[in-house]
Image 1 (cartoon, rainbow, N blue to C red):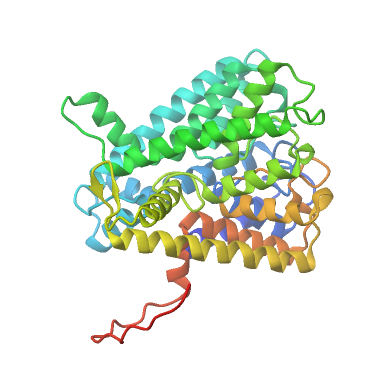
Image 2 (tube, rainbow, N blue to C red; image 1 turned 135 degrees about the vertical axis):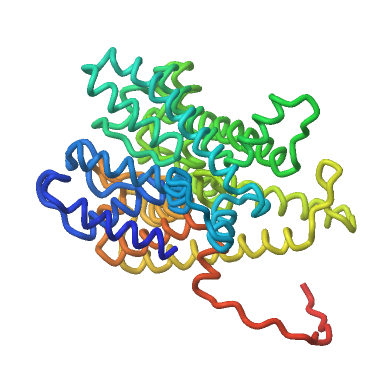
Length: 436
């Protein structure tokens, strides 16, 4: 947490340099922009293509990349280049940041992660550049392809096009490339590695973690697409007046971005309350652990749903794909859910005292808080081209900054950073019965 906070403060100071921005830029807005980038959220209080120079945009892209890989991976990359060995403590931190199961082989895993990132972002940049060349000069198209490939794969949602992706609402190619990068980045590096090994090796079997991530992700995308389509079908302010093709494509794009990224091809302020409420839930869930997405994580939700099902069926063991889920994993899932819900509730309550929710009132605050916690970045807007948080005071912006950074490092890591671990006691208390 402190590492990302330090990076955000330093980057905020750099963004204030005259070469980085155009016009006036306060420190709180520079700090917010840097925090949003390094946490891969995408909420904006300044218009990226208008208020930042090419150097400012390059710094934002670099921050997004640091956030996606994790600063420990960047440090490890330097060590790899200069052939310096990491000590055990550094490897342990690296293991935790990447959600790698063991310390052994973590450096080899880092090398593969970097290769995956270069391949997917490189392919995305080439494809997007080829498409953008139709609308922009080559250099603008090239930078647009590189920036949006980095932003999409790392689930950031930053764009350097004025108006965002609104111009490409009906463009199947752009929609599929952006969504593919978002989905792949949100799966987690361990899942990507296992999928690669599964395709490469004949007798390699996917782990229960990878199966849960793939199934839950696909289910949420399909469910989200149906939700947006059905809820907004008769809403002429959103998709009601679009062709059936654009309605389906926009619903799919919105569903993918509701979960992990901040791009949008529709004006979310025109959405119905029910759509925004379901969208808030999807954003709070987020993506998979060990990747570029934030939130509670799909595996947490899956474990809790399976556990609830087993309790209702009076089963003693929690079994998924013929594998028993350890009780410690269930306990952690409950802890994550309770702490996350508490964070969200506290932030919404505090903001409701001092800030307004724009045109949507209280629901606007709920949507913005869930977007920040899930490091998503979609917003109903401030009435212009910026996020709702732009209308907040300095206190509200700082609260959202803390929420974005806590969403990036994870609920448990953020909680453990605040509450020091107590020494384990060598005795147990007698049980007491509580009626539920």
